[in-house]
Length: 113
Length: 114
Image (spheres, rainbow over the protein chains, first blue to last red):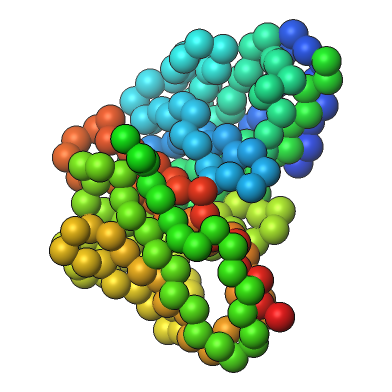
């Protein structure tokens, strides 16, 4: 019940295209859903996060869509750029304060120039 | 703001040895969480320290222990190292002082056990 599933495992997108990564969770007590971006050799960096009381959150080219009834959420990267090439992790937690984040297995995104 | 800093950046140890990893939280943060990230996988929660006490623990054996100091910095200790302990160890700092102060990760310590 603590697992977070993530798909696809890898994604190749042309520059300017839309990248879409999907996640699903089981534990309805989760209250915070962040997305992290990680470059090789670096720690994860918070990209955008959402609480379950809203269905969508947009920050620049990044949008989270959240479907509470389906227990699914997704990350959309608009106008994808080669600099967006990284591994993306969705996560879920009972709190935004670093307590027991459950991470998905990650999606390796490659944006072709 | 220096953000979350971890030391050392890389470490090679022999099976059976003990290791200590260190973390300094982001300025203003009082809570430190530790994660283990195996190659090609998402991070897994080890434990969290707040007010110098272990507040929550993930599914890791007692070989993994920690400490938090009065200045909020933290150490992760791993005893009797196994080959399977080879991973990137991440520290995340945060504070309970309201939404908007989410967890921030350091760059990690790459531990290789040979």
